[in-house]
Length: 299
Image (tube, rainbow, N blue to C red; front, side, top):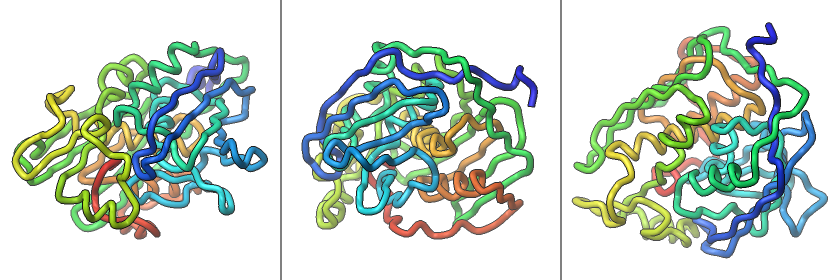
């Protein structure tokens, strides 16, 4: 791989912290993001279990049930995808993240607070370079009418399509060429979304206890309850945001052309698994995620 295809690794210039409520636990949560040396990658640690490090790699992913959960042994950290999406979108390769609580704070339901936080800390170039993981053969994953595929290509381009039977959403399609400036303005502000008819089901399962009109776009059968949208197609933009957060588990930038139709965390996870393992397939059914359930908040 030529040097032109590589870029310098990056980390934060100074430590920064942010606090809020956990989307699913409803408990207070705090995350502190610190600079890390070259080659360190992104590593999580719980402040109550400081000796247990959880790298942001596919091998640490334990569940994709309404959010992405990483873990090592019995130590879990949930709802990591929005912070990881911001790191991936801005090109941050090395960072240590200390978490107080069982999950990262949901904040406003988007990645924008993390982007602003990382920009305030400053992003520092490092000496070592990072080589992207390039898709060399097509991979296609399907599950019913859900499809996720990648073709070889320069840079990373994502075309995502969704179709919901709600008049505020309907069918939406967006193509996004992943670049830091475009990510910060076009993808990071898009909030997670959920439906009122799911709330009782989720809370019976101990989920979405911290969900509110302030940290998600909430829809009843006819209307949006949480104020004006940030984009007309905010819903599909958030799907791209989540996909980038899951792609961060590859541990390095990805090159290729991705097409997603009605996909979600489970298919994202399967694509990451196959890319990380070097497995290719022109058309293979997706394996069922161990703890996947119905669409909801943090989709």
